[in-house]
Structures are given as structure tokens and as C-alpha cells.
Amino acid sequence: MKTEKWVPILLVLPALGYLIVSIIYPLFFAIYVSFVSWYGVAPEIVEFVGFKNYLDVVRNPLFLIVIRNTIYFVALVVTLEFVFGFLLALMISSLRRFKSLLLGILIAPFTISPAATGYLWRALYGKRLGVINYVLGKLGISEISWLADPSIALLSLIVANAWQWAPFSMIIILAGLEALPRSPFEAAKIDGASDFQSFLHITLPLLKPVILIVLLLTTIEAFKVFDIVFICTKGGPGYVTQLVSYSIYRTGLEDFRFARAAAFSQILLIMIMGISLLYLRFVGMRE
Amino acid sequence: MNRPKGKRLILYCGIVVLLLVSLFPLATVLLYSFRPPEVTSPALSEWIGEATLVNYRHVLTGPKLEALLRSFLISLGTVGICLILGAPAAYGFACGFKGGTKLLGWVLSIRMLPPITALLPFFIIISKIGLNDSMVALVWLYSAFNLPLGIWIMGQFFLQIPREYEEAAMVEGCGRMRVFLSIALPLCSGGVITSAIITFIFAWNEFLFAVVLAPLRSRTLPAVLMDFLTPFGIQWGEMYASLILLILPPMFFAVVLRRYLVQGFRSLIGGGLRS
Image (cartoon, rainbow over all chains, first blue to last red; front, side, top):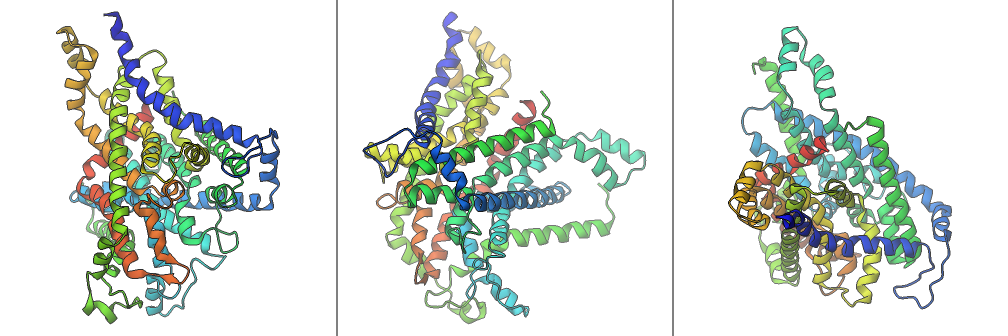
């Protein structure tokens, strides 16, 4: 009977071991690499250089540009995804029929690969041959250079990314909406509250935990964005669409400055963890 | 719910608009995949009479087919590992043990890791052990990254099982393992399927690792589409057809097997509220 206690732990062990070898170890290795000088894949000489790599990253003028781009991107993308996700969720939840089918169709953008989204929108955004400009042309509007115009390139990517992730918000918010109790709403209706009022004072507060999760998850995912940058613009024109993930990739795998890229990626990790903690503390997680 | 007709109308209009916006990009790609390869104009009227399947034929008989099959195999492999390692782990966590909740928290926080942070060390490690440009490396990394989510989802389902079932079985003399295999798993097949589907989609869609770790011999479908973006211009016809092939499996899961995806998402917030 005593051995029974150990079985759950035994069940967990293989997965744990696998994760430690596959992720934890590489992570620590990356931290190690960020503190040494490391050029190329298998350098002969590796010296400990302390925080030099980190300083190199931060002092690079490109760093501020990339951070600024990323923060701008994340802020807009999360807002768009949240607002549209919410609208979609509200609409679906008021339907009586076809809910399930509609849900399945609306989820589609989310399930396709971010790379597919990249290819897709690159085709749509093409200056001469893209569909969007074609449709605009029919309406009398001249061609817009969605991906090559520095002032709107980032916005184009934001739209593409929000298109992909809004269904994610939608489905989580929808699940939250459907879990809400009916009684507060009925009571409010009896008291004469309008739909809008009950939305503001009952729905929103009750949804706070769900809203928090949605915002947190979409923010984390927005920081990780890479595929559409790589496929649509490669960080261009100039540096306007270079986001952190892509910048790290460039540093590590095109310039082969592994140590610096490793440092940069730790900085990214810290940023993500920091923002997550901020969210949780700011909005207040109960229990 | 009785709503005035006006409101209903607005609701339906809104839904149609949002539906159009969501599907317009995908519909466009589908339509253009039937465009003859020599035509580059977006104007539908010019070529709609000559809609053809030749793009698909080119893609499915060319080297891209290998990439497609590789993606498929890699995705299946990833699902296999995630289920074999993840299901017992999920059950173990659901049973509970000292420090279990904390450990689970750590396992889940792996999701906060940006892939790029793991990519660099992985690239170096794989090169050193000679696994570069191999499917095995991808299966390894994909399964590791997806394991936490799989464990979480299946764990949520395992938690739903009423204690009485397990206790009844244990009183009859079944060990925990038997309980797991004969009771928990069958009861939670929905959760296992959900986890399998989500893992498959993730592995199928993955791009960054595929491009970096398997750039030549073992290319996967998402990476291979990069070939179409040549410096001389984009080969639209085959690109669109390949894109449809890339999109098809996840969309199939989304629309046809949506029940499982929705369950998966529900389990995301179910746990969030409780933790």
C-alpha cells in the first residue's frame, strides 16, 4: 500500500526528465553562452566576459528601435485582438442557432500556421498583383505599398497578426461569457437596467479574470512574433518592422554572433516575465 | 430572448461582416489557387473561364511533396511522444502529490519561453551531436515545447473524473497504474484527442525551428514555401496551391473537429480561474 503514494510521482518523472533535458538544459546553456565570447558554432576559444554581451546589445542603436517597434506592435495588436475578439464573442453568444458551425469557421484564421498567415498576407498586400490593391483600384483608390512603405509597413503586419489571433480571444471570452450566471442579469432587468448598463456593470466586472487571461496570453504571444516578419518584410524597409524575435534571429543566425544573440534572448525572456508579473500584480490575481 | 427586430438585424449584419473579414483572405487564396500559372493579373474576369488544377498537380508531383510528407510524419511523431509522456504525467499531476502544484506551475511557465531563446542553444547542441538537418531533431524539440500544454489539457480532463470511480477500483485491488490505464484514460479520451489535435496543429504549423534546424534535406512544408519567394518574383500559382495544402489540415480540425478545440480552450480558462 505504501508504494501507491509514489506512483503519481513515477508517472510524472519521464515527462519531467524529457523536459529537463530538452528545454531546461538548453536554456541554462544559453545563459552560459550569453556570458562568454562565442563566435561560430564550435569555437576553439571561449572566454568569460561577464556582462559584455548584454552591454553590446543594449548599446547598439538598433536595440532601441527594435524595442520601440515591438512595444508599439504589441500594444496595438493586443488591443485589436481584444476588441475584435470581444465583439465576435458577444455576437456569437447572442445567437441561437448555428453557433457551433460559426465558431468553427471563425476559428480558422487561428489554426493556420503563422507562416501561412505571412505568405497569405504577403500575397494580399502585393503592390501590383495583390488582391487588396486590386479591390481598392476598383473603388478608385490608388495602389498602396502596404509592405514597402515605411510608415505603414508595421501597421500592415499588425493587421495581419490581429486577424490571426482575434479568434483566440474570441473563443476564450466566449467561454467566459457562457459561464456567467443568469441571476444578476435577470435581477438587473427587473430593476429596469438597459442592456448597455448591465453590460458595463455586470458583464465586465464578472469577466475580469477571463479578460486578464486573454490579455496576458495575447501579450506574451505578441512578443514572440517572428514568422510574419520573416516572410513579409524581413524587418524592412530599413528597420521599421524589425521586432525583437527577428532581431535575435538575425544576430544569432545570420551574423552568427551567438553570444550576443543569447544575451539578447535572455533580455527578451526577462521582458516577457516582467510583463507577466506586472499584469498579475496590477490587475490583482485572487488566490 | 426576445429582441426587437431592429437589433436582430444589426446582429446578423455584424456577423456577416465579421465573417467576410475573417474569411476573405482565405477565400482569396483558394480562388487564386485555381488561376492558370501564366496569368499574374488579380482581375478575376480575365481568367475565371480557364480555372485549372494544374497548380496542384505541379505541387503534388514535385519535390514539395516530400516536404508535405515530412511535415506529416514529424507531426505524428510529435503527437506520439506528447501522448506517451504527457498522459501519464497529466494523470500523475491530477492525482496530486507533495509539491505537485508547484511543479506544475514551473512546467507551465515553460510556455512563456520565446522559441528563439531555446533555438540558439538547440542549434549549437544539435550541430555538435550531428543531428542537424534531421527530422528527429524537430520531433524532439516540438514535443518538448508542446508537452506542458498537453499535460495541462489532459490534466484538466483527468481532474474531472469523480474520485469514487477510482476509489472503487482501488478497493477492488487495482493498482494506480491499472486505474490509469483502464479507467482514467478511456473516460478522458476526449481530452487526449484534444491534446493530440492541438499538438498536431502546432507541429504542422511550426516555422522558425524548421527553417533553422532543417534547412536542406529535411525541410517541412511551411519552410519549403519560402522557395516560391524568389528574388525574381513570386511564383504565384504553385504558391497558392501549396498554401492551401498547408492550411488544409489545421482548418479541417478547426471546422470538422471543432468540438475538441473548443474543449481545449475551455480547459485553459477552467484552470486559470482555479489556480
